[in-house]
Length: 310
Picture 1 (cartoon, rainbow, N blue to C red):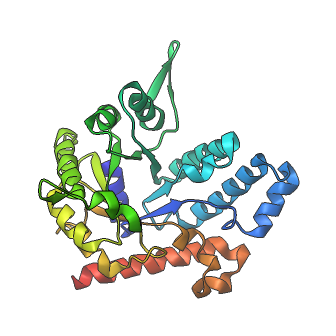
Picture 2 (picture 1 turned 90 degrees about the vertical axis):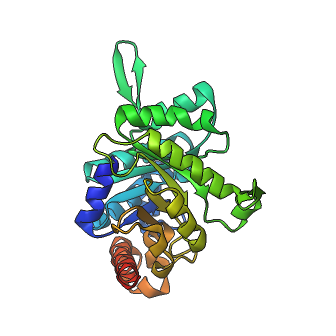
């Protein structure tokens, strides 16, 4: 799947992933009311509204970007119907040819970690049949339980030719409380980056190039991105924090390798809720998908300018 992601970036000219992180306040009123009229003001109604909202977004952007990243918590808040909407979203995005990064941030040990890996990236034996769970192409993984929590994912990645993005330096303001602590003279995020680089070497495609093991490094920490890019040369970096969290194209150039690859930049509410921003207010609620499309184009141009100027 790393090859599919790279091919998609080259085809679209957009090293961009759109975070499908729906909250009901982002969903236009008319979509909510249509769903509620059919299913009531229930978890089923909320999940249906989210699904319809997502479908409109995907239809508008699928030719412009290579990948999407649904954040599972935004669906789990609506219980079982929400998880069903997550699954429908994953399936629809794959039908549209998009690479799907399941933002699940799982981290556990032993059989629990194995079950997470199989459920999201692999397949499970059910009697005489082999069944696929959620079926994403990549998943985000929390490494803070150590190798016990990550190695089951590495095994599935090699078997299924899928990938993971390991949390290394996250975009949130309080990340430094732990990730910046010095250990053996280095910040923790550098030590995690070194471990990711080792896992990446273990988990390479036969054709070489980039590993199935990538990293998450926030756009809000460009200097750390520069350091980690050198530490993890064979890992793609998933970069959250563009737009709404303050990241911009000029901050991102150090996340890329000299080949112009090696990073994919995420924007979530800056795209999916673009119609609520003053810049795109002219589109209105019913033009929410067109506003998202315009925001993707603006983001693509911003990143392209920054890469040209570096």
